[in-house]
Length: 370
Image (cartoon, rainbow, N blue to C red; front, top):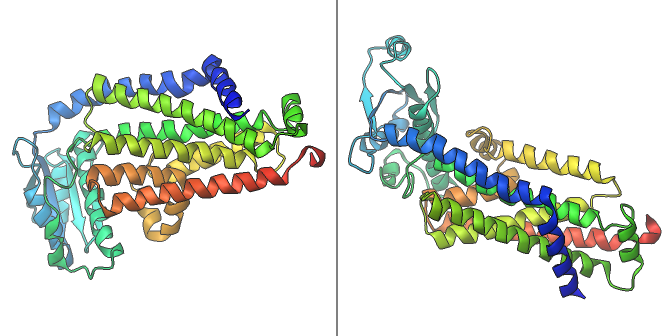
């Protein structure tokens, strides 16, 4: 019975044009658009030193200057052209005249602000450097080490952005994360469409002698298989057709996408059992979780995740989007190590919790109670 349900659900998914477009065709089209939009821009600018003024207002921020002076592109060109200004007003004038790409103010170990005039590739690179530096400092602090100014020497120019220093690779990581999280919509619709208070099919399933949880788990397995196939094709397309370098071991990138897919599917499974609401209300609730979680995880505003990490770090541990993006980020920036394994553990634990809670809620609902 379990196998027949899985097979039937897979056939239904393949035959759904809407499902196949939004989960398969759309991500590939969007990834192709990103590729042509960003690759040529970054290639034309990546070896140009970025003119900046770094204002150090606290000696504790001196290590950032040391790091900035060492940063290099792959061809050995200095990444930053650090200029001097007699005052902050003079620096602002240089920025307004276009002689600077940004002014970096360092007020402490990780209290770093960036002032720019406009948007562009160079501004993105500067923001990327600062964000990674802050997270590297945060890694030391969360590990329990006593952070001293001289301890930040370990940040090397070629290690800060992993194997791929293209700041736009983040967009492709976010694209993968989006596909994984959007799998929650597929699992929610699959489960809800077979609930007794939503369809006649659900009534027959709920009144049958077969355990309802077993039927739902079979449906969940089918959705997971389908999403895994979709994300596999998407990842292979980005890696081997578009030749994108994700800055890490491909096997680990693939493992991360599979775990992220499971997080997305179990999220939809959990929300599908959120009370006896109508399907559209459950879909609305799920979209609030996806969009809200995506915003708070930095998918829409890069510094938001850092802000949440400082104010409410616990939220980044239960936010599916934050857990997924942190795993990709850790893999790209720090490689396979303690931080990556910690992110992987969060994904496993979060998936198990959502699955177990969903099963408990499923057992509590029955045809008679609906």
